[in-house]
Image 1 (cartoon, rainbow, N blue to C red):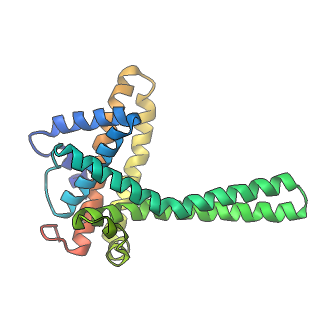
Image 2 (tube, rainbow, N blue to C red):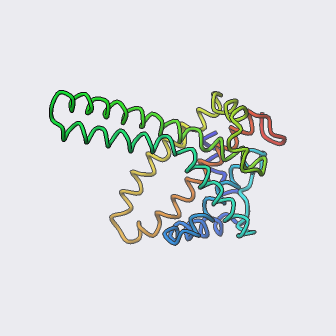
Image 3 (cartoon, helix red, strand yellow):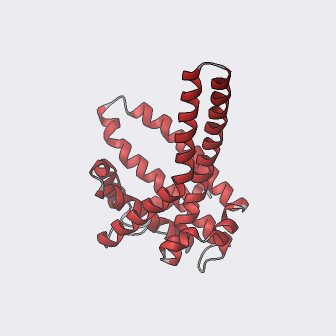
Length: 222
């Protein structure tokens, strides 16, 4: 899976052009619209990988790509409501306990700490679920499919999906070290968005391919 994921962004005759475009979108993400376009492209990667396509999608149909990126952002925000609400409330309770300073404050502070730990666990689950939700949305071409928990549960409880999630998790950790090393030079700063795009495409390929294998999408391996 790792070998397929790392080679996937380089497949096809337009690999260099795709990486350049993806990196430029990364540069322009502060302008919002390029960020939606980049997210939409990654949703297309999930879709193609789940269907067993060996080459990344082309950068075309930009309007549709941006809309898909906007949908993916909304899905992520909806999934994040509970974890972020827990973090907000827990931090408020913890701060209230610290300022109170008496035994009741100690109880509040303890509850706040527990809430923060639960929030972190919820965030962990959030980042585990979202790729599966976005893949199902892309496959079904329906926004509501991102909340089809029957299909999503089938994928996220599988060993294939767990492995597909863990490998990019490790890749992301390695990339962070590389990015930190590159960021100390001007040339490195220029290279970073292109490297990030490459790793994102590789990671999303692994998510999509595992999802397609587990749920039995036509054309997917397995």
